[in-house]
Length: 142
Length: 280
Image 1: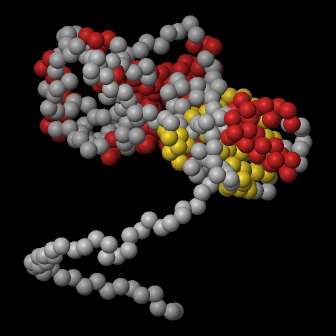
Image 2 (image 1 turned 180 degrees about the vertical axis):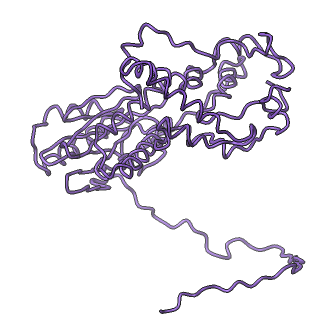
Image 3 (image 1 turned 45 degrees about the vertical axis):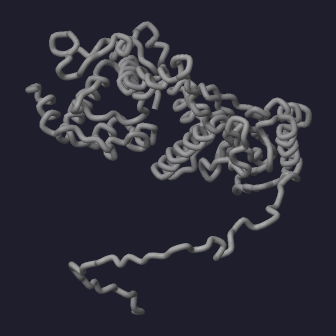
């Protein structure tokens, strides 16, 4: 759940990812892989909640870790982040949906239901990525 | 992006893909302006009162969609937990879904901890959820319940604001209902007085507000249990259907009849013995 220790976070600004255009490895628009882009689409999100929803989990984690660091010292978030990294590596192949069970248990979201469990469940998605292309992209070969 | 393949898997949760398209549609050229369809609102009067032994919640039963009554017997008092019920005003779908999710979360919690949830827990979960979506979820809720710490009545606004008060009204008919409540509320009322007060408050909302109407539902929550009275008072304008609208068989004359035999080929036949439960 949300932590309430927000006063200590007031001076830090949480950087928001997603405002920069979809840069490829050279920092420019990757037309081959991502298609054409328009400045208007990239610069401003069309829905007020789009950005905040995209980064919601990241921002929550950052806030929680910061509060934990302030309360218990540096070791607590370090240990937890190590566990998160280990749990995040347990994934299926790139084109198959992974359950993220260990990550969910660590975060405590295995016994809460939110909109991300009801809407757009990736297990029930009707589109599947092309296995070869997705694996090549993941390995950096593409 | 026009790509024939997908590079990253889809993200769960809300999908904002169509919002650019919607903005373009709404601000279209002069002939091409298209208005988005309006969601069904509950246009409501809901009220709640804390009395001596618990909480009484009341609601009307009309759901409107623009200027038409969409549902005459809408149930606006939603079940959250065995000891907590919630009245919802605002967009009908939003209140339904939000209270459903709240109820699921509280059930998981009760199963995990073996305890009945407290009303503050429900309120906090709602507040977090609604604030996260910055008011886009149009749910104005009145939560009432009795737990181990006593009887509580809370209101949660769509932006996540909460208020804990002994008597409350929400919805489009809240002003007339609040008038009745402010006038006649006393602390520590008994059951019949409290039921009459809530019923009269909802009635005032029904009489003075276009968006509220039809019957009045009441829900009485005490430590012993819940009494869901639906309907408590029926509208005197309820009409009974004068005639049946079913057609007698043979009303439509049959002009021609053709029978096509379907050629079926028996490919495979299996027999599975069923275990009938014999007496043992």
